[in-house]
Amino acid sequence: MNEIDAVDLDRLAQAIHDEYLRTERARGMTVADNPSLVEWEALPEDLRGANRAHALGIMDKLAAMGLCAVRAGSPDARPMAPIPDDEIERLSRLEHERWMTDRRAAGWTCAPGPKNLEHKTHPDLVPYDQLNETVKEKDRVLVRAIPGLLARAGLSWARR
Image (cartoon, rainbow, N blue to C red; front, side, top):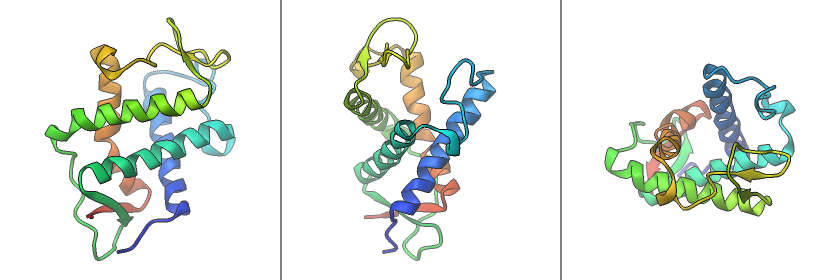
């Protein structure tokens, strides 16, 4: 099997950040609203690390579905398809848990109000079941984006 390496994971992390930029800018957000809305090269290392952790989390989600990442064109690669609907909620829960673990390890805590980069507080650092549907949908969107993110990074998936 054509295993992926750190370079592949970094390309995936960049694809994740590029998608974040695209969606936030489409919502009308600017760097004045959110200092993390900069290109990869200008992104602080801690936020690059968060994107790398997200990329590793994608590997975990693939494994939860009995899949692994491979380079596109690998003989083991299977055709990319949307994540099955019956997997979305389970993987969204995993994504939220991964995100909370990552944020807490970086010193973030839960606090009401908007996310505060300076104080490292975020209102969504609560168990998945306590999130409102709007916030849960953010996790679902991240899960649904996995096939496209893999493709943008030159990756595909294969059965384990």
